[in-house]
Length: 451
Image 1 (cartoon, rainbow, N blue to C red):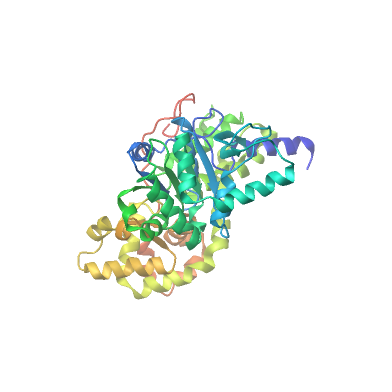
Image 2: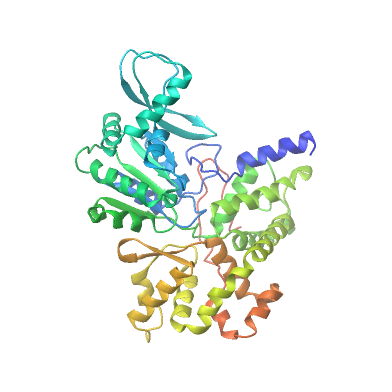
């Protein structure tokens, strides 16, 4: 790759990147999540309450949490959980010895920027600075000795929050100790900001509460789905194009380009389903190819979106048979699936609403069994109190499934799958939510999604 191409690819990567982002940064693409942002702020501000942000992968949960903490100027430390992490390793991630000597034992929160993200660690020091190898040994020793009470004590002294990310990876032993920490922080060491903000996919809230029933009233659940309006997907892309100084169909002066704008909006949504991570991948692929022309045509967007959808179908078509077999044999599961797609397959659903909206001839027990079976095969997640919150485990997979099976003429392999059961296509209405009027982010040009 030539140096100019490399520089352009790096610039595109800085705009369309898949890492968590801070929404208050003027250089960041940010589509407001509206009521969910308000729900998070309200939940975090409640006395002696922790917050659990859950939802499907790629929906922007970490970005939502980081944006709130930065926007509210909340001092915080951050730990990213790994699958093999122990309690002592968890504590070790919180501790960082200072580069200079200290005269007495102290603890403070050290905040900084690492790889473009805010980071925080509890900085612990004592006596005179030792050799580097001794520092490492000391950190290991302290992290081994720290208890939940020690972590809580430091958080309260600093009035600092603790963001725990990728919490679905926590093993039972670590899960149990963090649940104990949550209980202690709301009982013995309570303070205004010293609380946990836990982020994870899957049924992380349900797992936490099952560890300690007392946490049910001490943790607020905030669930985040995909962008609900298909116009948001296009706005996300055009904001990125404009940061890269690229013309696009929304800013074109040519009628031929403007006339294809709605097709761009639709195809971008069909390809990425309002998932910020998928939209970044799509934006990258379109923008990198457009450098030579200093602009993006409607054909670039439409063809790039179709290519992405076809690639996703190739990657996941072999995962469909298990779900399709269930739908062929279980009418209740078919009705639940139809309800999820009608309401928005990437949205957060409540089981009580599903019970109200599916076929009235089905009993409550049949609907519950269908939900449990869909969860068993990994299509949906049930979390919340008594499994009352429902969302698809992999919204990219579910969305692609819906697009492909609702328009099998575009996908010959899907048509062959449907030959044995034509009624299956009824479960997958075209996944196109309404194109609602929407506002643009502060400082951006006038909205052009509805020309």
